[in-house]
Image (tube, rainbow, N blue to C red):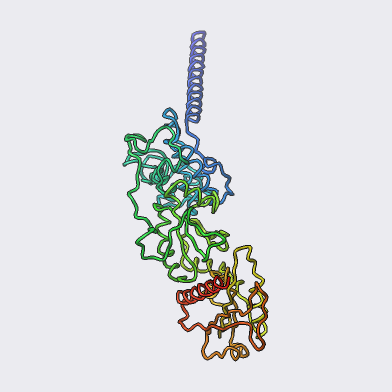
Length: 477
């Protein structure tokens, strides 16, 4: 009886030892697995937030994104830092470029805001981003490839070099953003640690991208377009004769190249009424500084503006990614053509009070010498852009008036046989001597224009009258 009892006790002890050994092994495996997961968690790189990279909030506007990119791209460009800092600087430069590539695209930004980078990667592969916005990488779930970056990898000569859109070069984007300017110009006259754009083997054995020479969009000479080249030394001010619509561009910039056809077209539409000019803001660093001081430091190129009486009126872009149409430019120009230089004449007595007497009230101290008045009799109900531009161009020497909608009394006064009729009213009063006009005289002499109603021909006629009257004044003196 004692022997079987001892056997049972030994068997029970053996079982207890086995159970203890099993539980200890399981505990060790759990602890080991936990430590491994913690180590993996520690070594996993934290996904960078594009807004944080650019130092912006999610409520930022498109212009803020572009401005932040420009500032940070210049700060972290490898050619701007000492040799020891270039590797780290290049990583940040690529991060900034990736963030701008995504956030500057309206559709990509919406997807990124809603589903994050994983969802955006899925979208780039043609999948529904909502299926991956909160889970693992789509590239682990049937899309092929194992790079985890999908369409977000910059490549330099076919070699991966950071995160970004497939095959897209952040250095090329940088040059396009800054108009293909040399590093000296892009970095505000500094070359940093040497002229690195000329050093082979930079950026991981990659020769930095250089744009091929692009033909000047708006040549100074030999151009068959009506677009005039302007710049810091030649820019309209308050004394300028003409109304100006101006494009501020960079020669190598794709958007500047695309909009050229619309600029040329609008110059043809407004021929002889509004001058169209172009300023190359990427040709020299001083020209870019001039452009930014004229338009504002955060302005992206191309940009557009009207110049009226020396005041620069910027064209407000509906979207930075949309090239304005000829219609957009036409509406903008028409909004800012001044029509207030023209006196509305409805009665005969207003010819004297508004067009003749006012000649003696001119302020000669401002350099204005009024010679006479130009008067248009029209059958139209609205003032034409051509007449408004003429009134602006000759505002220093002539008062302009208009009678619209077939005014019968004024038509009889001037013997109108056909509309429109254009006349110059030359005063018989000598303002300096206050000499009285002879009895029965109107107080002015009428000179009728006999040419076609075309801007260039009317301009020649007014110029001829101006020269003749100025010569007569000099003779009297």
